[in-house]
Image (cartoon, rainbow, N blue to C red):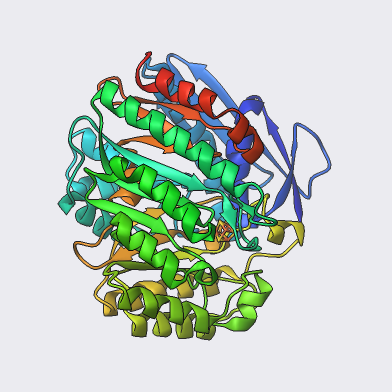
Amino acid sequence: MKTISLYTNAPALSNDMAEVLRLFYGNITLLVNEPGGDWTITHEERIENNIRIVCVYDSNSAYETSETLTGDAINDKRLRRRQAKLGVYRLLKERTGITPPWGSLTGIRPTRLVYTEMDKGCTLDEALVNVQNVFDVSDEKIAVLDRIIQTQQAMQGPRPNEADIYIGIPFCASRCAYCSFLSGEVGSGKLLVPYTDALCREIDSTLKLLKETGLHPRAFYMGGGTPTALPAPLLDHVLTAAMPLMASCGEITVEAGRPDTIDREKLTVLRKAGVTRISVNPQTMHDETLVRIGRRHTCAQTEEAYNLAREMGFDHINMDLIAGLPGENLEMFRQTLEWVSSLAPESMTVHTLSIKRSSLLHLWEAELPDGDMVADMVRAGAEVAEYMGLRPYYLYRQKYMAGNQENVGYACPGHECLYNVDMMEETVSVIALGAGAASKRLFPQKGFIRRAFNVSDICQYIDRVDEMTQRKRELFIEQ
Ligand code: SF4
């Protein structure tokens, strides 16, 4: 691991600059205003005549940029961070000869930047050019953004007074090695009944909240964890309680992500509740990889679960894949794509492996795969999606992603998931229920978002569910 000494007169920006350093070197140790690094860079900023001047240099090169202060504190703070990052980015690009696919962008929602430019009055083409020029994004990624935004613009936008509903089921059959979610294993199952009882209590209070606020649910999403890790009677209990929340929703998704949790009885429960979209997630079609990443199911089980769901009338099935799983090469990933293509789901999400600090892969000190290979995998995903008649409709990035790539959702026209787009673009308020769920309320006129968080510990959630309700009331009513 590389150790870098960063000398700066603005140490508060060191995390921002570290993000850019990781784009080029992966995991690093950063020494802020300390000697001892394999390489030393210096960042200095000063303000002269209402202009912020930033200089970033090492022993060979120097980059200076200037930015006029706008007087808008939030905007100036954002531009200050951007200036520091761009200085480090330019220095590293010259030093390494590497141009990351997303340039200096480290944020998770590149589409937001394009929309921000469009909000200022730019056309889509102009906005894309501006984003490319400022952040040095590759032509390939700009083309993906272009297609995604065109698809999103054709989708049904939110109406005033609409909100999405999210319910989290934080249990899984086993923990996947790459997982960074707060879900626990079902284990002895002793928490399942108290958890679903608490959830039903929160559902009841949410129904009252909707009445009081006049909010209408737009899309319903049950995720986790794995909702189908619940036994069928408990799944039925929660979905039956939640049915009034779904009444006005055109889209009702339940993640049935782990094929080993899917059976006829649970699918019958989902059908009865009116679920319109499910996910059956293979991640890979190689059994040896599934063992390696701790998913206790086989590819044959995935195919059986998929076929069963089809036979029972589910006409929108999503499949998630991961590019860059441990031990996989391009050929193996292509085989997975061909297999998924033969099953013909209505939507497919191609994730890129990221090794988050809370994952088992991080604990095992696993390394990210070769960036060029992962870039080829992501390209192969896009090609196969095109062949399947799916088009990209949402995209997000995460920290510590292989090859600095992205996650892209593809769907047949008309099968784009509203909830996914609403979440990524932050265009709709969300009322979120369950342990670890985060509600958010948009204030479009004021241009900001407020959030209320449920506790993530399952036992705490069960004990304090009424407090979670109160937090939501304060967010949506008492402000
Ligand atoms: S199924 Fe999803 S939530 Fe559950 S352990 Fe695997 S990645 Fe995490």
